[in-house]
Length: 356
Image (cartoon, rainbow, N blue to C red; front, side, top):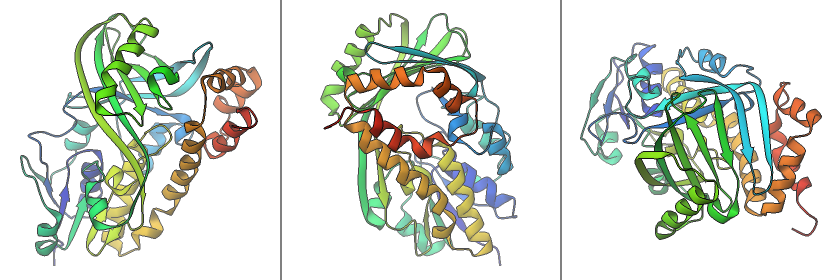
């Protein structure tokens, strides 16, 4: 008997899960509340080599799941700025991917590989679907269903404002800023989409909707970012931990399952991992909670890191960049396969002044 599976959400998590199931001959019904796949606003997403260790090349990480994804460019230079310091890192550091509705976006790359039917403009309800489908996979990219299905513990919330810039950009260089005057315990970053276009994003933690515009203007003024801006967007972000990732015949994957990394808000790697783990559990009958343990261990470390970052002051960011700029430390982090992310909470704790 053919399994009937519904997937709610046609983003990276939903499409990855559909692709994994199709490889086992199972075709799904995908429900998307928007009129199209992908974010309504375009932006650049970075995948750094330090995020996929022990895989030395992030593209090899994707290949482990049978995915061939085309980046826009390789990252060979990252410039990190704090209020009074700047450090520059060079090497094979990772890749830039397009997000949104562009032809080369990750969402469209995945959509081109699946055959399952996508139903657009449908605000699907998992309570209704679970009665007529064998399994329902929630891949909505937000925590609303998790809060209804199981216990949710919020870790960090943020307002996000971004824009698309026109100008002259070095397509292999990414810029990152840390400054509490506009990002609080968050950060801002610029990712080139081409040599003439870039996405600029400010992630301001624990910020009210009415505050974000003032913080955005402070950011643009303080960092002297005078590029022509042709498009802006604003959204909110919440990261949290949940008790159960499978409730009956309902699975939670990606950001909907609390797998958004809380220190810096990266979700792409965990979205793909958990979507494939979900498909594997459905097909082979394995325990989903057991399969996602490795992801949860990584998130727990990032929760520790988030707590340390929340207490950082601008002087701590300056001190951090001074240490990162040390040739030995820089080489250890970026020229070896040392899992720095695992040890980052302890590292940040050490650099903060006593008594913080």
